[in-house]
Length: 188
Image (cartoon, rainbow, N blue to C red):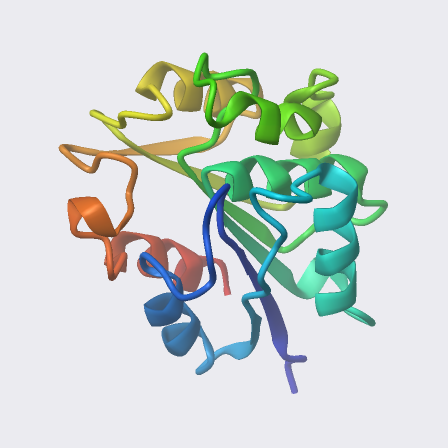
């Protein structure tokens, strides 16, 4: 019998587990395993250490090799940091609107500072997961496509560009994200 898959869905800065496609995806993934969608501190208290403590608690006793990480925006950066620091590779990582350096946005750069500094050790990120897929909108107002492409290129990940997808959030119609679900199911 196959052991249960663990899923961790990570929202972004100023986000909550109840927004965008997160509730829909959590409901869909319950068919395949245990799903955790914790609230991470943001904007107050947003830093890599605080988020890591919450993720570790949510995945207490987990086996990285049977765990799928899913992140959006700052959450996408966070799951890449988790891959960078793991001793054993995760089953898969799905990163929506990832970036790896400041975005030039005064509202977000201070919040994301500990996520993007110091620079990533891309070889460790690539070794920290068996599969990684990045998604990006071609007209994202926060994370330019070029930034998501930099990440995908650095880790030799598949990059799926969504035409007119914006920030892949509710404001651009992403209360559901079937393309993401299909890619996750391919990894199970």
